[in-house]
Amino acid sequence: MARMLPSVSIVIPAYNEEETIRACVVAALEQTVAAHEIIVVDNKSTDATAAIVHALQATYSGMPIIYLQQFELQGLIPTRNFGLNHASGDVIGRIDADSVLEPTWVQEVQRIFSDPEVAAATGPVIYYDMPLRRFGAIADDALRRALVKVTSEFHLLFGSNMALRASAWREIRDDACLDPDDELHEDVDLSIHLNEHDLTVTYSSDMVTGMSARRLDDSPRQFYNYVMRFERTYDKHNVKSLTLRAPMAIFLSAYPALKAMRLGRNRWASFQESQPAD
Image 1 (tube, rainbow, N blue to C red):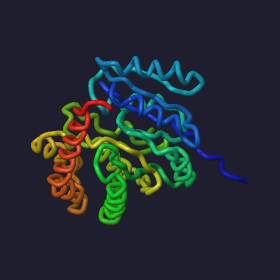
Image 2 (image 1 turned 45 degrees about the vertical axis):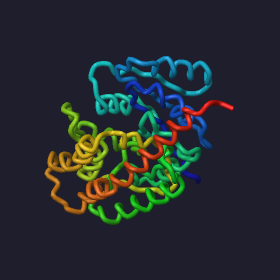
Image 3 (image 1 turned 90 degrees about the horizontal axis):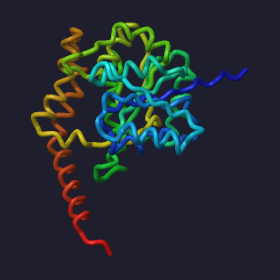
Image 4 (image 1 turned 120 degrees about the horizontal axis):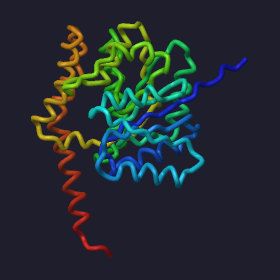
């Protein structure tokens, strides 16, 4: 008898995401296999985020777009947790508001979680606002596959592109750090707690999403502080492994070249926008 494929919820935490939320939700709708539900969790947005989601609900009136508000606490983690706790699918995808899922994402998540041993999964990204996107996608996947081998003690989830079995989330949610000072990598924290519970995290090259490289618009100091979230998360959990420091070294060493590419792309975009229309 064929095993029934798991239902997939998609949770999108959002804070002032009027520029990206529409594309994010539409991509989640336009899947080869429909998601069980798409939950946008608004965290005290002061822009048009809520209005855009409500407009999408009206336009796609037959689709399971759910708008929730998490206004008690400001921050990604309480907003993420609120969405995960309200999801009703067998598997809960967690993406960012600037993520643009590939059309086969839900289908691939269902395939991965048809294995009852898998508790969580993650995959590569395509940076849609960087040059050389095709090359970048190949490089990103190769890098993440290499990290899977290097960090063999346990695999790291990537917050912009991850999914958790609902039962696994219920098992670790009371342990997951709330991080009120916003010092940690929330996806690494989840990875550590999954490992502590002997829950299996897997990586799939076919579980692909697009995302913005807007993090590269930060100053060097801001970017360094962002990367050092790895170190602070490991210290929080008393993780001493040197191999788990590999992502930090890679991000810091690649930053100058990626920053130059991003600046070039932004300047070219500004130049094109300044040209008169035909």
